[in-house]
Length: 329
Ligand code: NAD
Image 1 (cartoon, rainbow, N blue to C red):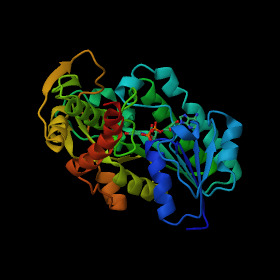
Image 2 (image 1 turned 180 degrees about the vertical axis):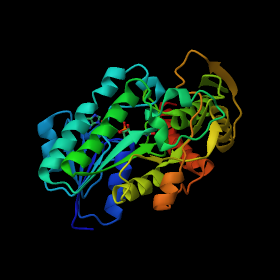
Image 3 (image 1 turned 90 degrees about the horizontal axis):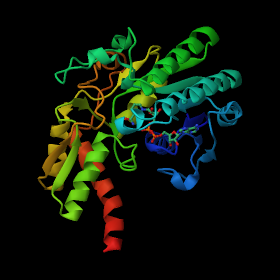
Image 4 (image 1 turned 90 degrees about the vertical axis):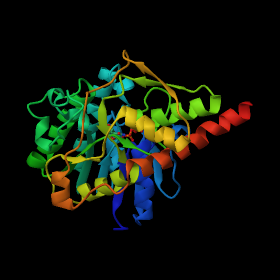
């Protein structure tokens, strides 16, 4: 294993930064970390790996990224929470350039295994209209009517992976991530997702003494959330597996957004007055992950409860928020 070369794209982001750290811990000798952002903006910048700043929408950059590489984890994408993807559909779809050029370069240099991070946003909207959900099975992505913009790009890129496998014998593996959260994730600025956004809002209320929180929607929409450690283990298991079709990688612990706020309030030791913003982006009404395929094929199931994962995430965001506030006082 230590002799194998591994590339992680999107390594300056949340999941990519954790994956690079985990691969180092597992003893991979040559890990290349690639992201478009300047190094000071990376969520985590690790030593002992080859860090490159490249725009992977460019074909030549993808060849630089994958040279002398055995395994590729392609996590790079222009993405964010509902607030971002609902108002940046063209930007989200332009990520198709990244996966297209990465696949071509990987095929041409003889990469052995290629992982693509797809999303639960590929699932047909008409199967997610009720908060009392039936968990989504992989086959529910068709007939296709995914999230506009971001979801269509993911679905197209999934199929590109499939056809590179079938037509060019490049071994591709695809995971459909369901809401990943944890420390070092984006928690402010407009691209954050519900768990980190709610932790940040509760922390702001606690530090400012303004005991109020604004919730997007009526709070009754349902979701499941996967802690980053479970995502990392599942991602690597899928890359090394023989599962050729896209597979769900998510938690089955379904909560309403109101219940998510309850848990974070408990962790923070506060109770806040809730203001519901019914005009804010809310995404689908209900969504959960059916894990039958990954349990049967890989024996994978999440190991970190939502409460335990949120405690770690809350603590990390609290440290980030507390320091500037303390300095300003
Ligand atoms: P992230 O935004 O933190 O990381 C993505 C990284 O890709 C960013 O650092 C960004 O700078 C980089 N990037 C964007 N365009 C690039 C380009 N042209 N060239 C090189 N790098 C580029 O997101 P994340 O949460 O770490 O997600 C990683 C992957 O998992 C993404 O593909 C995302 O769509 C997918 N995903 C994530 C979630 C989740 O809940 N976090 C859910 C479903 C799917």
